Amino acid sequence: MAAERLDGREVARSVTRELAETLTTLPFKPQLVVVRVGEDPASVAYVRGKDRTATQLGLTSRVEVLGESTTQRELLARVLEISADPEVDGILVQDPLPPPLDIRAVQEAIDPAKDVDGFHPVNVGRLWNGGRALVPCTPAGLIRIMDFYGLEIAGKRVVIVGRSSLVGKPAAVLFLQRDATVTVAHSKTRSLGTLTREADILVAAVGRHALLTREMVKPGAVVLDVGINRVEGKLRGDVHPEVTEVAGYLTPVPGGVGPMTVAMLMQNTVMAASRRRGDGGA
Ligand code: NAD
Image (tube, rainbow, N blue to C red):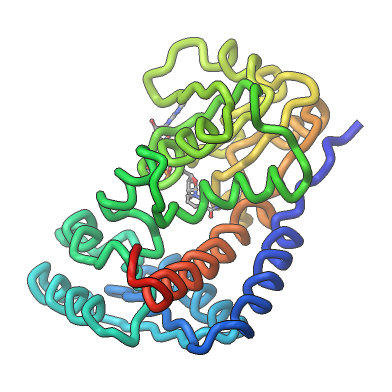
């Protein structure tokens, strides 16, 4: 029997519906600024998607495009300028940047109260301390999918494959905060399949198509496939298609985790705006 499909598009719609309602109660229109440097085709598409969703939702959205030859100093100066603009509620700089630009320094230049990607060290620290953080969008989306479908997290064994600061590490904290027992696996993990077979909830965030095969999945498990891989012109996840025959629940690629990332970015922008304009704190 095929696993139940966890439809990220549907969950994302419910998030944006809620946000649209919240927006009607706010006396201001939150503003998001997305900075893109250069013309990387994937970045162009991602930024367009964020801008379109923000505009459709009723936010003020602006995309600032800087040339491929922008220097680190110029980029930092521009980010500081945008970040200091009182009309701007959320700012993000699309990764990857053209080399040799350093994304970390740029992320650290953003006001933590406007850091809607949740990558500033202040937000990372608050997340780990259980404080009031802006949380990275993709991991936040995973939790939202679990909650939308009423899937239990507390007490469950969660295995996250991938330890990036973008997905794996923040996802580990979020599942831990929800009382799961969390293991993070990575490229040097031994006997990956033995480990993943113990997971009630398995998160794949590697970037290798079909790395996780059906033998590596516990029957009935919830499988959240974050991977985005281009295979013969199509988008595919990190999970082998046969996993649907053993898993209990599975996010498809496309249409699973991806739409949630943009929805959670919208949520972070509205939250950042409400906190900053409402009570002055991040
Ligand atoms: P990354 O390259 O920063 O990290 C990959 C991780 O996988 C590393 O921690 C590495 O140790 C681990 N890894 C590599 N090979 C492995 C192996 N053989 N076994 C176990 N672990 C291994 O990638 P990332 O930024 O975390 O992204 C991961 C994937 O998720 C990519 O496909 C990316 O495109 C996708 N992604 C999707 C969304 C979304 O919205 N759906 C958002 C972010 C990233």
